[in-house]
Image (cartoon, rainbow, N blue to C red):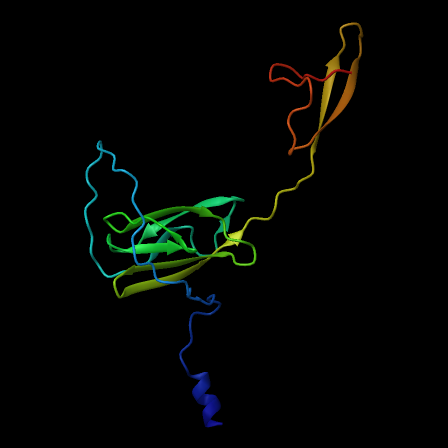
Length: 180
């Protein structure tokens, strides 16, 4: 009975808080190269604080609407950090800011696994996301109402448009391009 009371009084995390798994990806050892500096902008100041990963976008549990790639950006607190996101080397600017343009994680692993390091100062984070539901692949049916020059009444024409194929033969941006 005493054991049950002890367990019931043990501290717990916030109710409903999702688990925060931490990645086991290897620690990066060399920073990714930065793009060339824009001479029209002031220099980015150098920051050398302890490594701490802070993701600004996307937020944990955010729905990613993109189907192929997505931005992820934030700060690691140290401009000397080497960083990977899902194993992809990601540049870190002198002020510790980072921005990656990465493939959207797969449906069976919907998360960004982040590792940043400066020497033995290593930080790891896992950012869970949600993937948007697949878009419908069915084509659209467009109904055009036309008046033939020789006819006094309108005729209805239904055209099937497959979103995965080029415009129908004879279609143009200046007119309906549909002949009957």
